[in-house]
Image 1 (cartoon, rainbow, N blue to C red):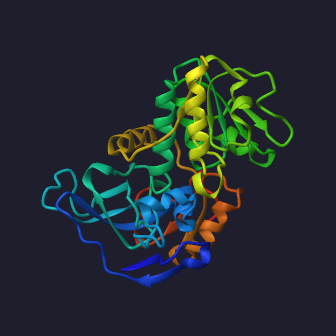
Image 2: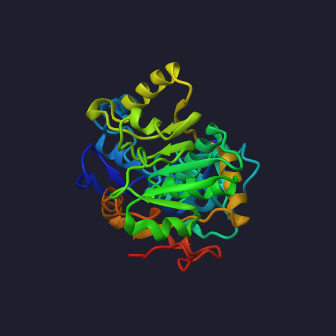
Length: 341
C-alpha cells in the first residue's frame, strides 16, 4: 500500500511517499481502507520527536512506527475473527494508534465507530482526536447548563469542537482567537469572542466557570484570575522546552491545584470508541459540525502539516487518501468547510 513514511525525526523533509506492506489485521481488529485522515498536533510532535520524552515510547533514535496519523475515516475492508459490530463495506471512522497516513489502517474494534450519516470521509476524519479531546475535557470539567465556558484557541481543531459541544451542553461560551477568525468562531456557536491581539482575557473582568486552555500563552497564575472560586482550568497545552514540552506545564498545574480552591486539571485524553459513537449521535443531531480548513492529497502531506503549523487554520486540515472520500452526503460544500487544494 502507499503510505507516508519517516525513517528519522525532523521536519517535513523527513516525510516521503513509499510503498509498504499492508497492515495485518488481528483477530480483534478492523482493517479500514482510509478515505481521509485528519492532521493533528500530535502528528507534528511525533514527526519532530519532540518533546524528547515522547521518544521513550515511540523510539529513542528513530520512530518505531514509520507512519504517523491517527484520525482515519473510510470503509471496512476486512474484519478479524472476533469482530462482531462491523462488516465489510461499513462506513466507519476511528482513532488509530498510528499509521493513518496510508491506504489501510488496522484498528482494534473497540476504537472504531460508524461514521455520522451526515458526513463524508473528509468531514468524519476531522472528528476522532479533536472531538474526543474536547468531549473528554468538558466532561472532566463537569460543564452544566448556565455555566460560562471560555475556550482559548477557539478557532482550531479541538477548540472548534469545544465551542460547539459546550454550547450543546447549555453553557454560555466565549471564544478567544484573533480578529480575522472572529466571524468563524461566532458561526460555530460562540456567544462572545475576544480578540487576543487587542484584549487580554486574564485581565478583562470576565468570570468563567471553566477555562479550556489550548494555547498556553499566559502563565498559570494569570489564567486562574478570571476563574470563579471553584472553577476549573483544563490544561491541554504548554511550553516546556525540547525535553518536557507541555508536560512541564501540566506538572505545575497539578501541583498548584493542591493549594488552591480552583481545580487545575491536566487533560490526558484516551482513545474511546464510545465517545466517538456519542460524537456521531451529536453530529447527526446537528449539535456539532466538523469544520474543515483545507484538504490536501496524500502526496502533499508535508504541505498539510506545514499548513497546520502556520497557526492560520480554522478547523481541521485533512489529507485525502482514496476515492472513498466522497462517500456519504456531507460533501465539501458543507457550510463550515474551507477550501480544498
